[in-house]
Amino acid sequence: MKNILIIRRDNIGDLVCTTPLIEGVKIAYPDAKLYLLINKVSQDVVKNNPHLEKVFVYKKAKHKTKNETTLGVYFERLMIFLKLRKIKFDAAILANPVPCKYSLRLAKMAGVSNIIGADLGTSDIHHPFRKQDFSGKHQVEHTYSYLSAITEQRIPIPPVRVFLTPEERQQAAQRMQKLLPPVGRVCAVHISSRSPKRRWPIERYAEIINRLVADQNTAVLIFWSPQGTLTPDDIGDQKRAEQLLALCQNEHIALYPTASVRELLAGFDLCDRVLCSDGGQMHLAAALNKDMVVFFGDTNKESWHPWTGRYHILQTESGDCIDVTVDDVWQKIKTFD
Image (cartoon, rainbow, N blue to C red; front, side):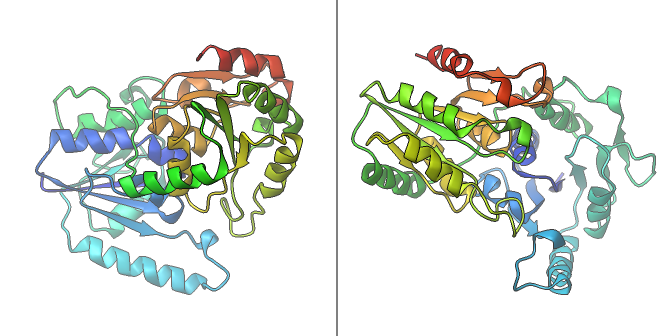
């Protein structure tokens, strides 16, 4: 194969879980050109990925900014597909491991005839995967199963990966030097989640942070989802982060605002361990091979646990993180010492 297209139109965590498939395809076909079609929300995940020839990014109409029109968004998308059709793909992989009519439509718009994906009961998918065709239980394993459609090689599943530049790391280190005194260990606390069941009370985060910085060799960086992360009118969690800092007045604690996924990744990269909720931020930390303690709410942990790195999952019978105690969290954090 010379040209292969992977389509993944979901959010940040889903694309992180697709990075092993991207790497596996490149291992199977090292001379092939591998292209990726994704939506704008997740584009920072694959920036600088050495396995990709080119990333095509389209915007969903619901993510348009206040200065954009729906017609303008669709026109930009049309230009993308005109470029895709010129490439002449040997195959397209619809990387979502559940049936997705929209991904199929994108592949057809790109002019691909050999399409691999979850079974939609239509002849348009030339290599359909039914439930029994997917291996394992995790999202990474399901997505990676598509590799079997284009090669008979048995290639072990790689870790989930992201690729930071030396400049990104340097800028983050310089930021931290201005925020914190020199310490031996830095912990990340990310307080945001789109799901109410995965949101832990600010007062409990404060108690954990104060316990951490009781060790004078430990500091804490507080992260949160900024305004507009999920939708243009999303207010973000800055106010909650400021409230948390007010409860933890200590020179070893600082807010670390981020305006992009790349800044969040570079900030996490500074830290030895991460306390967060299940979601995109957890998968980004996994892609950096971090130790994690994670609030899971009612998420299926077999399907969505961190794929890479050491981790502990905190999940209650109620499926609500408010039932997780401070001592529950502290005991898990201390196991990494």
